[in-house]
Length: 551
Image (cartoon, rainbow, N blue to C red; front, side, top):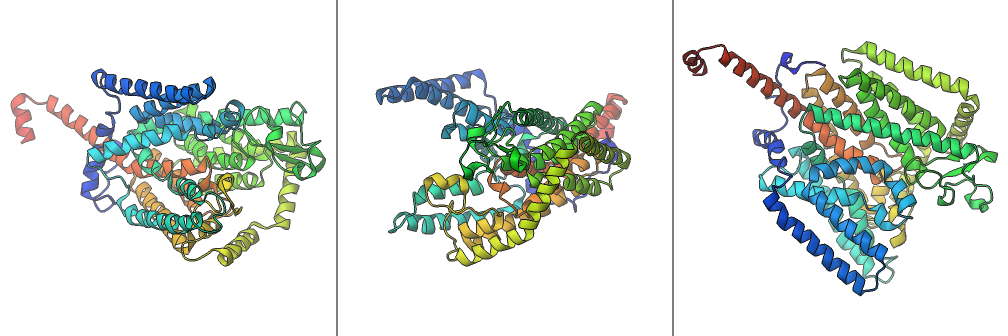
């Protein structure tokens, strides 16, 4: 690992934070370390929680609720309270739980709506606690500072759409469902995870925690991908039933009636070479985008981690991602994962460790070649499916058609209302399925909203580029390049709507915050090394000489 001691500190001209923000950033860790209260302060908090549990349990019991419902409510109160009390730990649990949320919701929660929102029980209380501490210390809530105007613009347009469009629909002659609730849900989907920038920035306090984050992602990817391979084996060997016997309209669709081992909706119909695996997620599309996003994190660990065993784990996880992209039946993952690897090899080739990149690329090629030799039928089936689908509906034409349709059907400058093109809100009212992201935004919040959102992601991408270019340490810079390419590609991707769904909706904003933190990590290391050198030099002098040296 490169030693930051040998690298010159970034110049003031490079620093895109002003001096006020720099001072605030330096205090972030110290101020946010106070997440664990002392015992005397914990006693009233515990009493408040117990009192709330007692009141809720009595009210639910008095209204004839079942014991299971009362127990679920008590558990929810405890985990929300603990997440608020220990926000850093809650954020780590949130990151761990997100890839398994679909499995928990369908296999433990029996598709209960509360289980689909369970991960937010870790996120939102932790966010509130972090915001309170940041406000108390007078630190900036919006990082970087240049994001403030675009973000407030997007928030303002979204609120106008909610008030005038969703509100007008609710009190109009034809509300088309519960328009106000749809608007609230649409606001949560559009803006709810943007504060993860602040969470990611404040959670990672040093290089060790950055390594812990990327290694944690690699471990999660390995677990999920192994479960995905086992799921594939159970399906193709007949231990889990295929779509045979279902109604005709479900034969070539993933559905919850055929879920297997983990995750949710699954589809397998060997007569038509049809397979759609959900992995540990609720649906195949979510699994595909988990594989796509995991490519970045696995590559970063394989390339930039200082420990050989974790580099090896990164290569293993990357190979498993490629294998699952082949097996899962999702054409987007099959196309995107190899392309992303090539893009990352090119993007990081200027960093002096080209030999490792060549070995990594060669290993992936050999792995795919071995897969082709062992399973020639699978590779040919996937390629035939991909080519036929591309010929039937080329992605460029698909995106163009949806953009043209949205341009004709959106109403006014504020759109058709928040949630009206959000598939997850269909239980609340009439929705349109629009499978491309920016046309979906156009339909919901109109052209002004699209411009505002585009300004947000462009500002974030530009500041992320400036942030990683400030970093001189090769290891940190390697992480920065990979995170920035991830932010860049997701920012301007219009195919499907990954920023509306797990896990990309979480990873995009969180790792943007981590990317912006990298220059600060390097500056803190330089200061620590300088202080250590000064202390060492002081010890070499007599007391009088030391005082003279300091003056």
